[in-house]
Image (cartoon, rainbow, N blue to C red; front, top):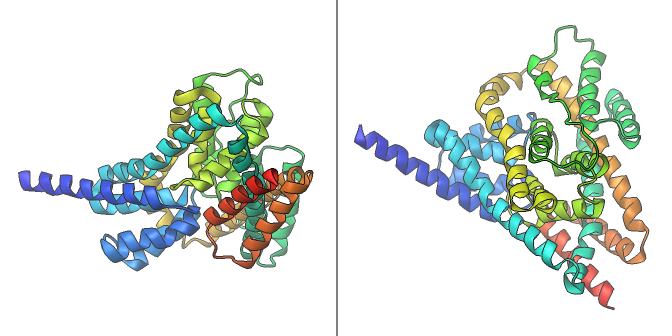
Length: 379
């Protein structure tokens, strides 16, 4: 019995060490992390084989939440059971949370200083370039010349531009695509629990519970990339409650980009700006909590669901709608960045670099924007 407990403890230590390491070196979202995670979990530690890894990865794309976190939690579960899943998730998220809290502290303390202002200035147009490039890339792979999806894309774009709720638009697009294929069977029932009610309330009224529930809602319905996260946070934190300015939110997304670990760590930074340390911790717990439950309950369900053509159609609709939501964000950012010549120059350069060197890490684009902004402001 003791030997079994020792081996479990040993396995948990291994999971903690390797996932903490991945959390410290993981840049560039799921795209940047795939090679790193596979190298650690498949090649080096042999916890799962390559085919299993590819199955988990493709499944992670069709459930809400951060893909890299879900893949890492699954590997933790394979190695050390349910406790392994929790340890893997916590150790992977922890480095990003701490770094973002530090960023939040220094940002609030020093963002008025010209030097930091200079470096932050270029982050905005660089982030805008990444969003626009993402729209080009995603629309090419998602729409595949499918007329229904293109029509849905246009409808969702219009709805989002006029301020309709993005979560409802995305789920609606999935449902419409499903019905367009004349599938008469009931839709996969689990998709509807994602309609966690939006927390309404008078603009500006702050409470810790409200902050937590907003991030919990975002974590439960986040499909697609980190830029969809921008759209949700923009709606809840900037437009509805006015807790942040759009500039602060863009800086939060940029911080999520330049720090290792999942881009959802932007939530930590945003939470810190709204309500200090407790706000940062609450936002982090809120946005990541759903992915622990989703990883626990849905992995088995989704391995079989991936083989279901009906669910695939529904999810294609979700993906198409996500592209539109990102496109609306991109257009808002583009209009803001083009208003001033320096940021327009940085935007053009970063966009050019992103479109020519498609494999280039987002970290470099952000750095180029940051340094470019600093130089242009000091010329």
